[in-house]
Image (cartoon, rainbow, N blue to C red):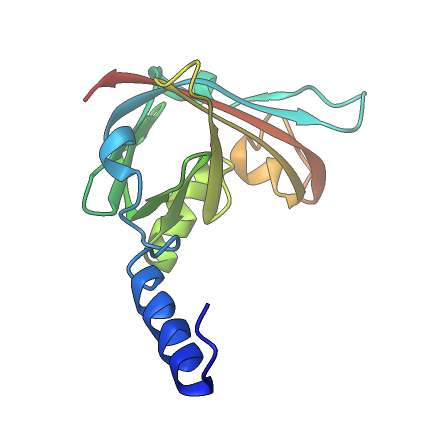
Amino acid sequence: MPTCPRCALLALLLALVAFSGCDTNNPGSGLEEVAGTYAATTLLFDVEAEEVTDADVLGKLRNRRATVEIFADGQMTISFEPLGGQRQLVTGSARASSRTVTISARTDTDEERMALLLLPPEVSFSRDELAPNELMASLLLVNVDLEAFDPAAYTGLQSVRGRLEVELERVDD
C-alpha cells in the first residue's frame, strides 16, 4: 500500500476505474443465458378465501397456451389468446441476474393485457441452475379483480387477495 497521500489517492482512483466496468444493474446481464421462448405450464391464482374457487388462468386461454419470449437485447413479448377473444401481444423489457429474470410491461396497454392473465406490470422469476430451462414466480397479490377475469364464476369479487403461481418452461432458444 502506498504511503504518500497522493499515491494512495491514485491507487484508490485506479481501483475505482477498474471496477466501474462491472455493472451489475446492466439489463443485458445474463439475458443471453435465458433468451428464448417459454410456455406457461402453470398460471394459477390461489385465492386466500377458502370458499372461493382458485382461478385457473390457463383454462381461460385457447389451447391452454401463453408464451413469453425473452430476447438477448433486453426486450420481451407475451403472447396469448383468450377463449372467444383475439390474440393478445404484450411488449416490454427483460433483465436478468444470476438468480432472477424480471419482465416489465412497456405501456399502459401492455399492463392491461398482462392483467388479463392476472399478472402485475412487472414480474420477477426465480432461476435455478439445476433447472436452467424453467422460470418460477410465486406472487402475493391484493385487490385482484376476479369478476373482470371471469364474470360468471366470480360475480362481485372485485378485490381479492391470493397467490399467483407462475411456471414457465423453455420450449425453444
